[in-house]
Picture 1 (cartoon, rainbow, N blue to C red):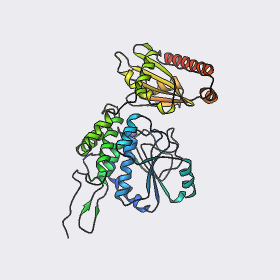
Picture 2: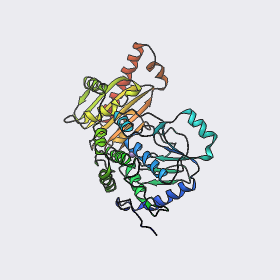
Picture 3: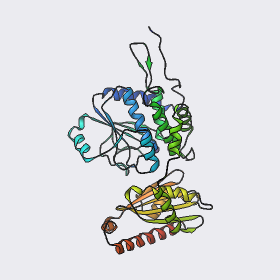
Picture 4: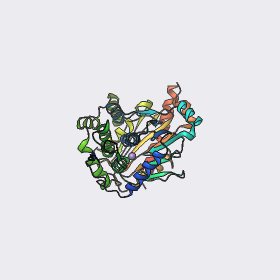
Length: 381
Ligand SMILES: [Mn+2]
């Protein structure tokens, strides 16, 4: 027998999450059994770096197993400038879900195989792709309601950590020439881009390992990835360019603020759909203001009120704060006090999208006074 050449220079147990090894084997088995199907790798409606990187890693696993019929989908929008920077500079092959794809799948459902990453199932608030997956990889506090699925889950800092570990633990393949091939092969096509994406996914989802759910696994996976990633692209994406409107709305937020240390609240008025990501950006910025511990930034975006909530104060539970202000079930908060809400305008949608400046101004005044008074009440408890 010829020499066996190993291209995986990182040990499979390097991340150390013991739960993953068996799951990786099971995943390889299920995927190989369904090899001839059409594969749909899907993530949630607001793909962030963790979601994008996880989807790309799943695609690498499929390619490694010889599965060619595969595509990556999301149903919402990639609008945050950092997510766009990542998608463009790493050339991510992700596509937007459309009604046409929906029709094609519906006509051929038994030959389609769905994998969800960074999200648990179609019943979730931020998941508009309506099919039940057969494989889920997720790190959120949630359980899937669909049955008979391979559920790869751990409540850790990033889904990208689980994906890194899965790649490391994928069974290797032997070839006739005696060489041995590994999924986590830093010399394989596109893998350095993938490692760069995964490292950014872990860095951003854990907010530099500061969130409560960040673990040693996340840190170990990150260290491994940074050994092989493309440093120049990494820095370009981490220090992404900001469009000028971000600064303009920051000014609006500053002018409209109601500040009563440690509380900061500001409404931005009406925002264009593709500028909605001003809201989390400005919320993060205002958290850096001296003395501030709780921030709410909100605006009317399209047919809904969108808000970002940031809270570093131990006086309130962030999840509770979001639901006290915007209503139960409208949003939530990640550990680390990073939350948000989306409230449909319902009946008032026609005003928000209408032509009457006067009516629009009135609607905004009402939204503003309701959000502000709810915020005051919620923070007086
Ligand atoms: Mn995530």
